[in-house]
Image 1 (tube, rainbow, N blue to C red):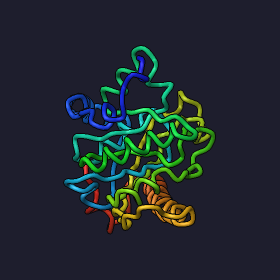
Image 2: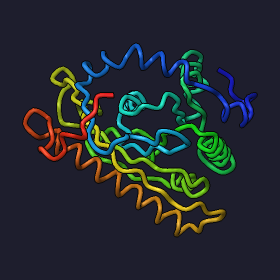
Image 3: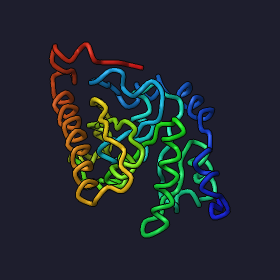
Image 4: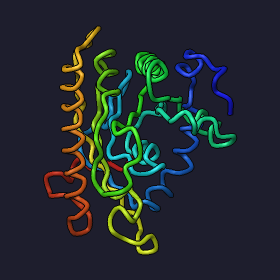
Length: 246
């Protein structure tokens, strides 16, 4: 699919609510059974209205947007995708239809993606950004965060929702062969973070906000890992009330 003829406005104002509702209707129950999905943590998962940033970790599978989309109630989420994937003949159309928009690394091209991202959240939609910037497949932990999400958080002032999953990566990341591995995905949601809007934050301020967000993603990841390793994959008594299947 050619994407160079589309303007920033085209990407920013695309409405993916219909395909996302369809996918959720078709896949929620089968997906939960297939992935043995369980979610715990803060309720509500995301703000009930207005724009927000979803900061998931780790980025370990192409199905991650679906995994994190299961646990929240909003029907319109947008996400960044590498520009090459949007140029693939069939897959690119599906990604755009489902709410993706392209990001090209480096210089003004990356800045254009940030401009689209700011327009998306300021219009009242949720935006998913994997702070690692790429798939982390060679181990079972988190990668290294980049600063793009922090810049958007400071530019817009919208809430940032940290969330993490354990068990969503390929079997080899957990030291298993694929035919021995039936995924059991445990997701833990954190409390939304809020940062005051700043016109021109310093690089030190961006790094400070990035680290603050990533610290909460790391906390959610550790909680998800601990719960997944409990007998039966269930949390301690005090966390039971926060489990949700919506």
